[in-house]
Every structure is written in structure tokens, then in C-alpha cells.
Length: 232
Image 1 (cartoon, rainbow, N blue to C red):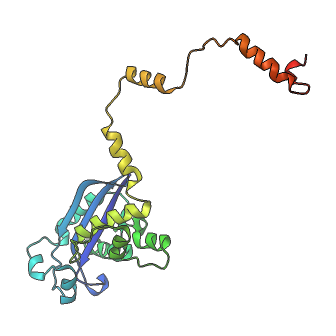
Image 2: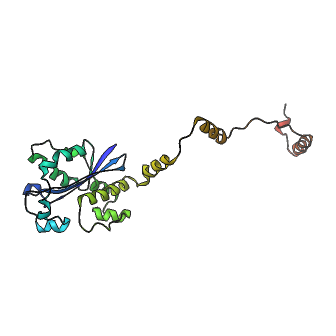
């Protein structure tokens, strides 16, 4: 099962007010395990950068002028996502910006049903607790030392760890798969030998009752009223 953990950084809070995407970060998961494949792109928003937004992610308008506009990276971005489910923290926010950019290009938008919102997962699992990415990282003991500022790829990596913990823990599937990969292949002879050694089967052996055992048994029966062993 292929999934994409996704995060964006933007110039503000609302695409309806002219805010644009400035960074995209994606992590590929296969059967809930990171594959090492990522998509990371800074985007020229074709507008100024509000100082409030720059304080959040540290991306200046001057820096972003040297990167492609969304129209130039849209195909590669959509191709990387494919038709996989999208794991997003506060999915409505990122999906709103992505679909606004695609609509601007006259491109087919992404159905909201493809998004799995980890905020909703966290609130169902921990009712009443904080559900921010930072709070969840602290809850699960995930290292936040590199997160001085928001960054799409870093946040996607953190979210991938949080998502796996929300599913039940990173040990699920990951360690078992790793351990299985370390086990050397066995020949048919090896398997047969192990099977015989561990099956518990033993060859039948003689177990004749001695005269002494018979005598002790007869003495024991004399102490029992109407023993069933003597009934015809």
C-alpha cells in the first residue's frame, strides 16, 4: 500500500486571499514504512512574502525568486503523488492551497476523500489533548531538535513518524520486516531437519510392566473399596 505524507509552507493562511504555496515536502510510505523516496520543492509564489509568514518558515521573497513557479513543477508534483492516499496534518489547509494552485492552472483538482487527516486521528485517539505536530512529537518522544522553523520536508518527516505512532507504533511491521530480511534462506533439507527436531515426535518404545510394579499395584488395590481395575 503506497501512501504519501505531505506538508506545505505558504505565504499566509488563505488561498482565497491570494496566499500561495512556497514549499512542498512529501515522503513516500510503502506498507507504512518510509521507502526513502521524497519530493521536495521550493516555489516562487509570484508575490511578496509577508513578514509574519517569513517568521514561521524563514523563506524570504528574495530567496524564492530563484526557484520555479508552481506551473513549472505541477506535473512532477502530481506525478509523485500518483493516486496514493495523502497523509496530511490539518488536511483542509494544505488541500485548499494545492487545489487552488491546480485550479489556477485549469488542472483537475484532488478529491478531499484522498486525504487522511492526522489531526482528526490524534483527536480521536487522545480526546481533549493538544493535537499540534509539536505536541504529538513530544507525546511520542520524537526528536524536535531540528525544528527551529517550520519546513515542509522536515515537517513531513516528523509527520510520517507521528502517523506510524498513531497507527499503533513504529514497531508494527517495521521491525518484523527488518528481522525477516536478516534470516538466511533455508534449503528443503534444512527445513525438514528443523521440522523433525521441533515436532516433538518420538519413535514408540517398549514399556513392559515389571513384576515389582505389578506387586505394588496389587497392594495399592487392596486399600481401595471396589476398585474399578478388578471389575470384569
